[in-house]
Length: 442
Image 1 (cartoon, rainbow, N blue to C red):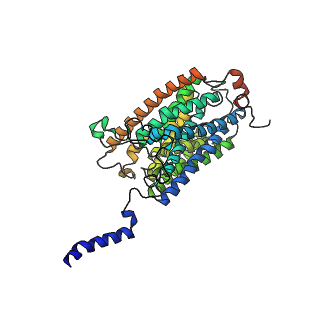
Image 2: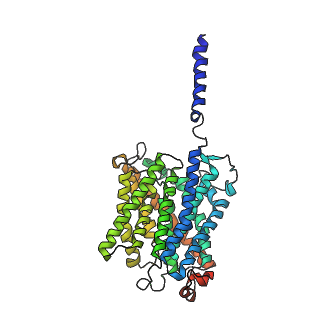
Image 3: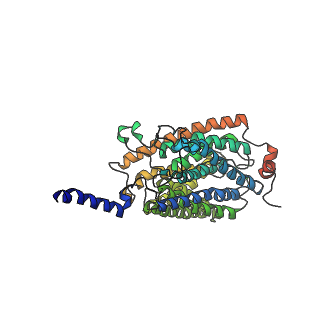
């Protein structure tokens, strides 16, 4: 009787508890239908950001004779990136935990079945969610080279860039690679990784650096900077930015990889940051030019959204507000620095909005993730100074690699298919000269 009381009775109660609370039995590798449903929804939202959100946003900003070329570039990149991601990109990013790349073990989704899990969701769902990030990142670069690039150059550059810039950088930060533990840089940083919740470096800094280099190699559009035509359809710009804003809830909220409070807070601070950046941008325009513009408020939204991206899963509402205020101010003035001071025709301000916004957000996260600023915490024994050092090192490494690799890719593209269309085709507009179609029957 004593044996039953001391051994079998506790064992029986434990088994009953496991049946009553099945999550206790397999908390780490059990499929969650709620998490799966949310990430599938987020996947659709992030694809919606590129098709049609980003395409319409950029399409409205160019002249009427180039609107279809922008839509074609975004569409072409989306389908190309999807195939590249399946063939090798996903494996480079998430194949294994190697220091520099993930290898080829998951090329063509080798070994991934409907029952294979990544955390609490099917790995094929995780693959698709990450694919939408691989689609929008090179598509963001489109804004730097509109109205003057060859379509063949767009495809070749984008495919190579995903393989040699985007996928490795993703692995370093999100796939267990170089920047997931910065102990190699300093003993004080051992166990400290990069805080980049949804892509301040992986997405925005990378595409911003690439945009700046492409703009330099291509040279300015005819009439830059004083004789360029204004955006042909601000209404499309507003519609596209609104789609991006809604899609960003999946971009940032989905990066929690679960249907939980962290995803909810990420969505909340994302919206707050975008709203604050819009107001700041509009007020600066109002003071500087006498009138607030629709294009301005839409651009301010994108600046706020890009800047909050890396910190969205780490900061609280006050942090979101500060991010938006700083994004609306700094990104606004960086546009003038790039175009007026440095005379670089980054046509739709990819570097000033995404590059600067992403890097700004990365640095701010080392402060506003701390509990004293209402954040969710930096981690055990991690100080603001330690976090700042880690974020700064990660930013430098990412930017340097993006610059070097992008430079080499541009040289390869220029030597093979060429970069810029001829003067006659540029004057005629890329809609007709490159694609044989018109956006409008004028």
